[in-house]
Length: 155
Image (tube, rainbow, N blue to C red; front, side, top):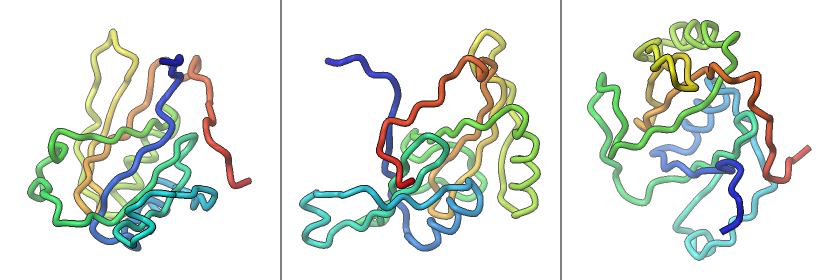
């Protein structure tokens, strides 16, 4: 296996692609990314719809779930099936992110202090409109983290 440097992208299933697009653009600042070609059998026969976005240096693809997804009941801040999607924010922007979630009426838990010996400082937890469990975290070691782009940008 080659030396892996980071996670490059992920796909998340959502109930409503347009609602999810608005959420990820408005709340997380995602930028539409149109240079991805999904040459998958499911796409060719119309079983899957993908929209992709840049979130920082990460590529996020959203797809409509083919069947109902079980999600935690409202108010339960834990990931469905144990999955959590974490997004890093600069420590200097963390309080602003909390303010923005509050202003939008998006319920969240936190900030939660992470163990002092680990790389994470604090986290906040919330759900997207489909119930996907999300985390915003700032890192104590953010000054030493290189910004990596592992995909072709639309720029």
